[in-house]
Image (cartoon, rainbow over all chains, first blue to last red; front, side, top):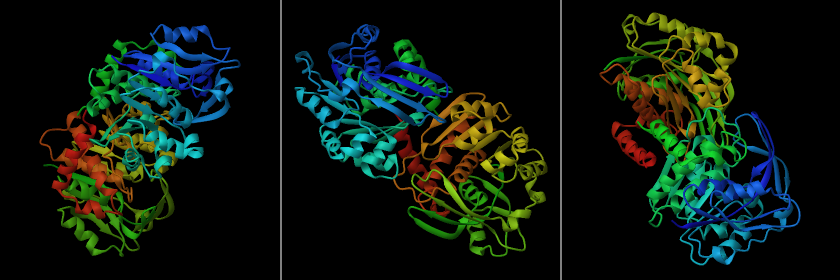
Length: 302
Length: 302
């Protein structure tokens, strides 16, 4: 088993969906990612929290064996995001973003992190993604996420990161923004032309479309879930399940491993959306995943 | 092989998409359905055209062995639809609808059609769907489509038709309208509760979600197509491929047959969208379908 280094946000979210509200609930890409990935692999977190960060939220990850040496505490408050979802839950409307301590985030890797084999650069500013990557000695497999904000104001920098990664996980709208393509299918090969070996386009309730230079498209639907409570963190959970699965394999990642990793990410994310914040994800067991995987196979099998 | 009776529109369409324009091009649900279904099975059409309907458009179906005894000619012009697609091509904007001879369509079955085993009630007014169904003696398998218009102004009548069919093919927005559900996954079992044995929810570029009372969900993505020229008729092509495949089997349709039929419908529709009007569909051969099916299997196989 190899270690996964993740850098991303650690946050409190206030979320409104048609199912209700969650106030100051645990969030942030690094939290969702770590909870998912730690079911399979050893995870190391780089991030920053404020003085208001609850000890129980630290303990939640510690109890899953997550290494938090790289999670620093800074004077001020933890990053806070406020958002709402309407109708079909496919897109969050941001109501308020308080960067707080995240504004001056300057990711420094503890010595012990520098030998990490797997690296996931969650959605943070592209220059910070590069700063983290430069500190890792000899990564075997690097993945990245991004978001519309960076594609609007720092697209050239995002493209610089793209050249240095093996895999991009990105949502459908972002894939179109990045490439100018009319749809996800056309966007995918244009993205691998920019450098990565493979891209996974996240399609929310419709599942995912992976494209690899070696084997082309691999597309599957999401696990059918009748009642979606809160889609926040589904993408980061997907990434966590994906990397957790991949790093748990003995071999260097092949496309076949990545396909299985997509399914694991998808199954993991199907739990996250069934409750607010990390509530459902924090409770998921390997047995739950096995059971849902068996259900999922029936759904997609002719 | 059993005969499929289809009742639906026969039309000329004027369509604008980001790829260009087609003026007064062959369209209508019955045409797309018949061209697709006739690759596998014998098709009988009930519909109406005006005095302006071109002989070459009659010949196109005749050459595929389609029975047109039930296609009547009325004084006046053929139904004409004008629409445009923007951006992601997921939804057509109707610019103009000239019902013309379709306004007084009163579907009467020729004697020779009344023993049809398979019936597809394409998107026409629900009372006309019922009128057609009442004239068929002992159908083995009946399917229907509908649209937002009828769900708005004649929902009770649509629900009456639903009670009499084995299968509904409907798009995602319509499935939510019909049931009030927040998503397609929640809508599906509510639709089978209304009567049909199974529902196929058409999800455009994302593929389809079938739900049967016997076996639950069966969900797969669409064949990846990089350049979509014109999505008009994709749903009716899906239905035609589905029914054509189903009627070509020796056995009474099982859920396993319906799963294969969904894939055939999906593969068939992936051709339709690659050109305007019925141009691509009219040229498709069984060899083309076989080849694309092999590609598709790779896309969805782990």
